[in-house]
Every structure is written in structure tokens, then in C-alpha cells.
Length: 318
Image (tube, rainbow, N blue to C red):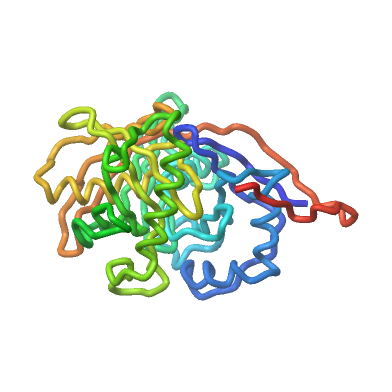
């Protein structure tokens, strides 16, 4: 029996596993991420993420111990193809989860910090409450920075930046599209093609830890105004982020800051939800983004696997 509490952040699902799987070994969260891919642990991810219990765009996490007592939680983020190094929409959901489920004592009329160790580092979700009700969550991300500009990705130039994971950014118009649902199928195909073209590019290597290397997502964006953009992030193998993508927003903010942007970015997702993003600090390692959004609990589940079930831990159709 696997028990979960489910949320959505800006329309993007986030399934928090609260009971059932065996402890995942490791000295820290990043090491546990590597061990989670072993078959004895990964079958739980497949069970919860794949159809018929999930779908090709499902997302969730395992809670694990933090790296040290300075954090409240550790987390391993997962999707249909494996385990990511960062997840902003999940960090926002975990802030809500920690307060609503009583994992962290919260100020009913003020801000409470929920400190979380993720594979890319330590992040903080600041949960704002009024009269005991959560109004918003602002997460402070790891340092984010520009990696390279105008990198050729199979005939189209992209900018590469890091926001806890490495993203390629380009205007949707560069592939003859816009960030709208009717162009989504084409954008998924372009995202897969661009990611494949960059697979062996030197700029896709993380400078400090090879475990953080690789292009995680491709961000297509439309500029809607001087401080407003719409984006869709195609990540993993053709998976689509319904939210404005938290770590992707951090990666975009690093690019915009280098271009001189100093305000608050209104970052809109393909379903119309928005994050507010700003640079909270500038360090030698890059900018420190703060990204504001909100998550909502959608249900509680108990999942099981009948040993007679011929589809086992499930399947995906993408």
C-alpha cells in the first residue's frame, strides 16, 4: 500500500509519497537520487507515475531525510522518465504540504520558512498565511546563471542557463509557433529535437558536478510586454509543464538579468497560471531567484498493485 497526498501548482500535478516505499539509502539527497533509480525503488515511481495510476505528464516526489538538521525535508523529484535535479512547482507544493500537514509549525498570520534539500542544493519555501489560511508560497532557489548564448541546436539558436537544472531557451517564433495549446504538439516535437541535438554539447555539462549535467528542458517563450512573458517547458522526453515551470523560471530570470532586466517578471504558463519572479540577490555564483506561486491540495490516495495485474507497474503512451 502506497499513500500519497496530491497537489497542483499552476495546473501542474505534484504527488507527494507519504507512506509505503522502503527507505532510499545515501549520505545526502543527491546520492539518494542516484540510488532511487535502482529497480527495487524505481518500481514505486513507475507505479505512481505511469498509467493507469498516472499519465505521461505526471510528476511527484519521495520525501527523504535532509542532508543535515538545517533543513526540514529532503526530496527526490520524479517524472515519467526518471528523477530531476530541481523542481520549483514541487517546492511550492512542498511548502503548502509541510504547513497543511503539520510537518513544520507555522505562523497563522505571517511567513514561515520551510527549508528543503533538493538534489541541486538547499532551497527555501516561504509560506505566507493569513488567519491560518495559506495565501502564497515564495521559494528562494539555488544560484542561477547563464551558461552560453546562441548555441546551435540543430539549426536553431538557443540560450542555455541553469536554475537547478540546465534549460535551453528560445522564442517560440523561432520554430514558427506561439505558446498556445493549438501549437503544443509541434512544440513537443521541437523540444525533443532540440534536446537531442544538445545531448553531447559541452555546454550541457555542469561545471561542478557531473550528476547535474544534461539538458533537462527546453523553454519556448512569447514576450508579452517588458515585464511579462508566456512560456511552456518541454522536459524529460516530451513531458509538458502546465505551470510556468519554477526552476525554468529561475533559468529564464538569469538570462533576463544579464540582459538588464531588474523588475518583477510575470511568468505565465500555457494554461494561463502565473508565477512572479525577481532577483533577490546577486552572488559570485549567479543570481538568487525568488519565485512566488501557490499550490492546492487535490486529494489523498491509497495505491496498490494486485500481483495478478497483467500491466504491472504500468505503461506510458508517449
